[in-house]
Image 1 (cartoon, rainbow, N blue to C red):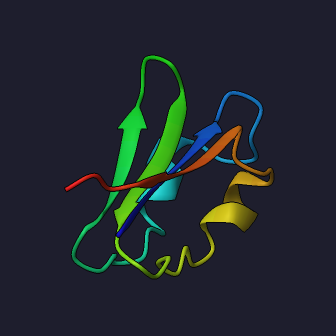
Image 2 (cartoon, rainbow, N blue to C red):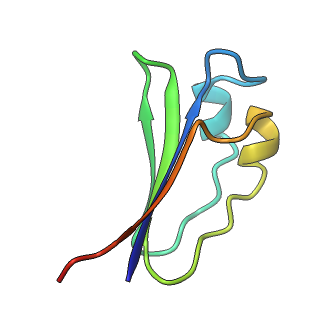
Length: 75
């Protein structure tokens, strides 16, 4: 099984965290939207074999994630 983490900086993005919240698609079990309003960062944590559909989120932000990592789950 794989864990994936994506992090975007919203400071220079085309949108705000509040605007993003209005457009977030529902994620499957094992996937979560994450945010840090004080640091103006937004992201996704996903555990599973497939990557969830991000919907319009990348287009709304207007940039690639500053961090995109994959980890093997240790059981």
